[in-house]
Structure formats: C-alpha cells, structure tokens
Image (cartoon, rainbow, N blue to C red; front, side, top):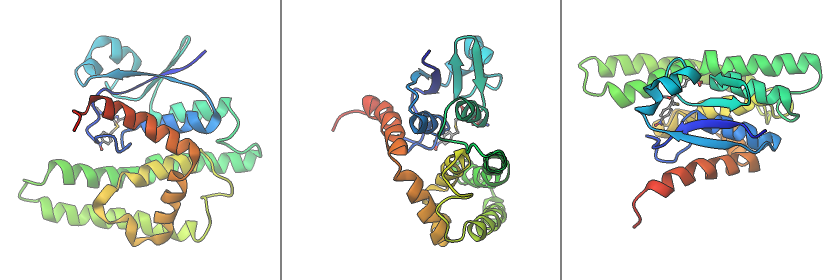
Length: 217
Ligand code: GTB
C-alpha cells in the first residue's frame, strides 16, 4: 500500500523545502518507498477532517491503511523501522542514531525555530533587537557544540542515518541568517546531505508544487 502524506498547498517558503513534509519526502526517497501527497490549504488544516489526522492542525501527516500518524519525527521513525537504509542494524548503533533523531528535534531545532520565528514575526516589536541577540546566542551555543562533535566526520555517527536526515533539515532552517556559515564543517555537512540523490528527488518534488502554482514569466 502506498502511504499518503500531507503538505502545504502553498508553502510560505516558496519551494525552498523548509516545511516539514520535506524531511518525510526525503526519508521515503532514501528507502525507495513511493508515496502520494495530498495538498492542504491553511483553512483545511483547521477543519475537522484534518484535525482527526493531526490534533494540532498541521502538516505533515501520514496515512497508510488503518494507520494515521502525525509528527515528522514519528513518521520518519516509522519509515525507518519498516525499511532498510535509515537506521543501522547493530542495536547500539541503532540506539545512538535514534538519540540523534531526538537531539535534532528536541535540542537543536527549538533554538533555530525560535530564532527564525522572531526574525519573521517580531521585527516590529520594541524589544526585537534585544530578544534577537539572546536567540542568536542560543543558536550559536548549539551550533558550536554540534560542530565540535561532528569534527571532520561525514555523518554524526558512522554511516548516514535518520539522525543525519533530521539534523540536516533542521540546520537548513537557518536559511540566509548567515549563522551556519560560521561553522564550515556544518555547512559542508548540510551540503553533503543536499547532494544525496534522495534529497534531490524530494526537493524537486516539493518544488514542483510551488512551480505548478507560481505565475509564469
Ligand atoms: N512538531 C511538528 C512536526 O515535526 O511534524 C511540527 C509541524 C509543523 O510545525 N508544521 C507546520 C504547519 O503545519 C509546517 S512546517 N504549520 C501550520 C500551522 O501550524 O497552522 C513549519 C514551517 C512552515 C513554514 C516554513 N517556511 O515558510 O519557511 C518553514 C517551516
């Protein structure tokens, strides 16, 4: 059975692959699992049909037969458990890869999202500059620690895993902030992820949604 995920009908990122369906698409491509996508509008996400799938009215969701899932991390873990290619077979290496999945979502993503939300939504606030300085500091602490741990390795723990997939997508959210570029090994790490054929296929698929809607010319 081919799983169906949901994605933004019109992503605010204009095809840059920053919304969280991108990581799920990438996981499917890594394991060679075909998938369908149902595009949803912002208003549809808050209607009861979608809320049955996602209690917080967000994307992505995952449906396969009787199973419905939300939370990108849980969806990717589900995919990784059912297919080879995203988690090592060795039990200890597998546990460490799962720890990196949690680290990406629980330790590195929050300061990055707080920073990007402040840049997007709080520019006009009187306290913006002061708050931004704090948020930038928090991002730099995490990037410095991550950079130190990665060192000159290609991936976080041996071979590429779902931990790397999530970490790369989280770091990409820094966008044009200039923060990632302060850590050349992290920039190279993200570039390595983006160079994977599975990443490129996933990126092209989400970009096609934007291009199909963008006015020509
Ligand atoms: N913890 C959940 C998960 O990992 O699945 C978070 C899901 C989530 O935040 N979904 C967002 C959403 O549906 C889309 S990805 N938002 C609509 C809402 O809450 O009403 C977040 C996102 C949105 C836009 C950009 N962008 O434009 O750059 C980047 C990321």
